[in-house]
Length: 241
Image (cartoon, rainbow, N blue to C red; front, top):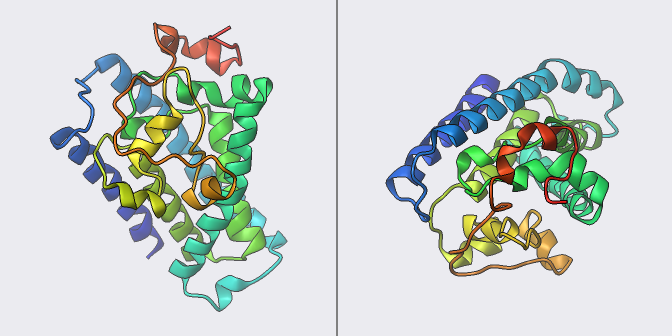
């Protein structure tokens, strides 16, 4: 069952990848340079996810504070973990935008591309990916005591939400009350803005960072050729300085 859950997440990725090419919201012609760069980064993050699944998560199990996983259905526990971890991730995300050090070291790479599509989901600094994954593992294992299937469901819920937010498709505005829409995430990546919509809508509403536009037809990223300074961003150099 666990393998089937992770396989289902891969299927969702492929379906959204196809969907944004058949019914794109923004006109994003195929860019070979971007495709290769983003694909490599996605493969790095996939390797890190496997490392967590095979090594860190089993090790964290010994420090579980509760054992909800023994009484809750795995899918329900996974959803609870995804929502709980999204609270910690919201705080971390806000901090990354508020702190020059955290922005340079962890987060600027993710905001640099001039296009937002599903490949941009995990186009992020490996250190940033590790922090976000740690929050998910902490919520699922240490706080809730989920078993392996519950953990897999938490990864599935978190992954689908992130893939959808970055997918280049149109969405109904009302959906923004439930999940972060692609249009909402484009606001977050807007050129010269890079703010608002830091995570799960309930936290953005609660902390005054919610923005749910009908359309999001504007430029994103850093502008110019700064998105190509990948080595500098991986080294923590501010390419906008």
